[in-house]
Image (cartoon, rainbow, N blue to C red; front, side, top):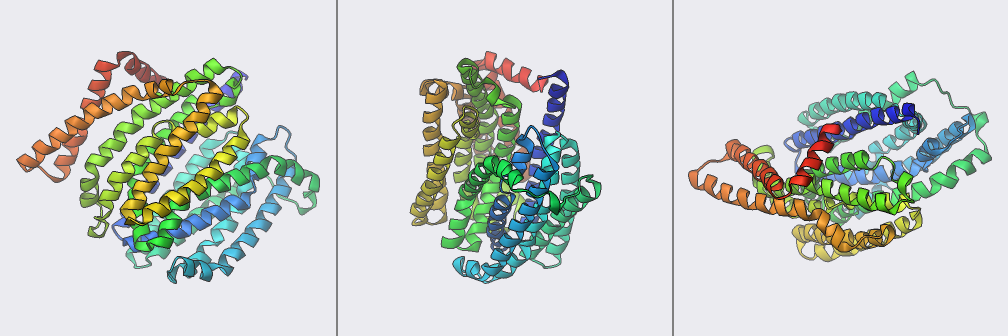
Length: 483
């Protein structure tokens, strides 16, 4: 890799990290604000509608976006073929969503969903219209433009959502805001794009070349999307929109910060796993190091959220969301397992050429989630939340079993990489527990209670980490400074 490419990659990495962190935090804040305007029932409606839309958007892309980025030699025939096929499929999927909007509303037992499905279906077409442009920007590592555009669109659409929500538009306020977001992005990309699609450039050869790579990607991405949203769909079907809204907010609180950490650490430590796929020693070292750092940053946050769940809901959300407190506490442990290197398994398997195994495990995971959630549903919403935690725990070690075989490590090595974070978090938890007992005894509540708890948690965690694992502490500090 030349120095020029390295510099571009590092520059792009910084911008894509900023994009992930800023958009995730921005979306987190806007959903929190909207949760204080909209009731859980309306939040649940949006959660269900969003699942269907995201599935259709993923399928409409056909994996061409990834194929455009991956191809060494890219012709205009590839771009035009991708564009018109994406548009064609998006139109078909959009009309299918409109056609089945009534049956879908019957399936989820809520007639209000029918109109929402019809409105939100236009996002499928809007997203498909700029899939090629986004692929070209990614291919050229022009993430700065994507970041700035995404943030501007997020701010404008968020303001629109809040205004509409306060004016009584309910769940539609979020749908209209999302459409505005996509229109801003699409409009700017078309205005500034120098590429113009041509129907004459569409060829069977270009389709075969793109789909030979993109088809597998589309299938895997669609299955992944379905499995990641299956709990929402099942809760919507079994428990209704109110319960879906509660679960959605609980998952938002418990998962958001961990999701940011997972994505950033993954990109920092594993920009190109495939480059070292033939060096088992480097793979082992890199994987265990990444697992250690993700757990060091993620696990204490998960446990901190567990201890502050009551205050988060009572101080920042409506009275209607109080049932979400217990769900946040339960789901914080699901986030713990996700902080134990859960995001890395697919990267390792794909980098070592095990894409078929990734697909098989993804399909197995999907069916397993249905079984776990259905079994948990007999015990209500809390049972479903607990079932997703057990599901996460089981599959964390199932995936680890395959990774151990491929990169030749023992389960002991994996557990050892987690030992610093688990030990330091345990001591932090004791400190927080004793601190909260004292604060309640003294009658200290609300924001002061939260700030003192966070302060004691941070100090006790890093003090424990520094005193017990000085070498690991120094390595983490060095990595943060370098990055």
